[in-house]
Amino acid sequence: MTFNRAEIFRLAWVWAKQEAWSRRLPKGGARAMFAACLRKAWAFHKDAAARARAAMPSAFASLSVAALQTAVAVEEACDRLGWAGIERLSEMRRELYSRAA
Image (cartoon, rainbow, N blue to C red; front, side, top):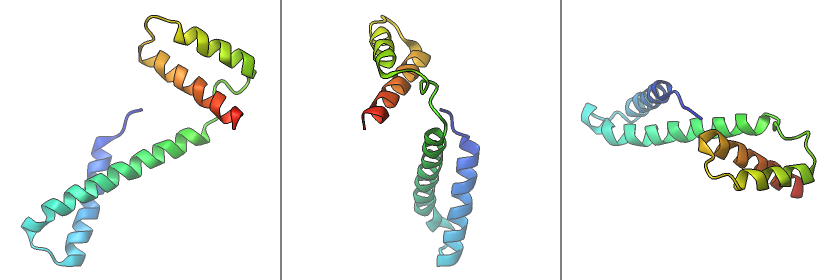
């Protein structure tokens, strides 16, 4: 998953300016506040991405549990998965976990 870093920085800068204005900080005192706002903006975007990912139906929802277990075993037996394979394996494991719960 990729994040729009420019958007995150803009959001953090807006929050830092609002905080600095509301607290009447001198111009040099905003550095620590910007760092805190940047961490808050990253957390906000990560949470939004997690909520969006949870709202999307799984590509493996139509498979049976036995078929999912077989697919997981096949993926785990591969020598090299690559990034897409790791993501696919993670999604299959999440689907299995959600069905077990």
